[in-house]
Image (tube, rainbow, N blue to C red; front, side, top):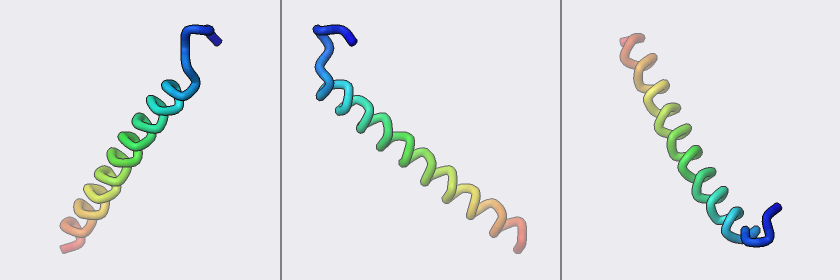
Length: 41
């Protein structure tokens, strides 16, 4: 690892990215649940 890079900054960036991924996954799950529900109707 580079001495100029702080592990805390990396962890913070990873945490933000993980949060974004979780949000996207939730939105996709919601859409997936809605589409089949409409098709069944």
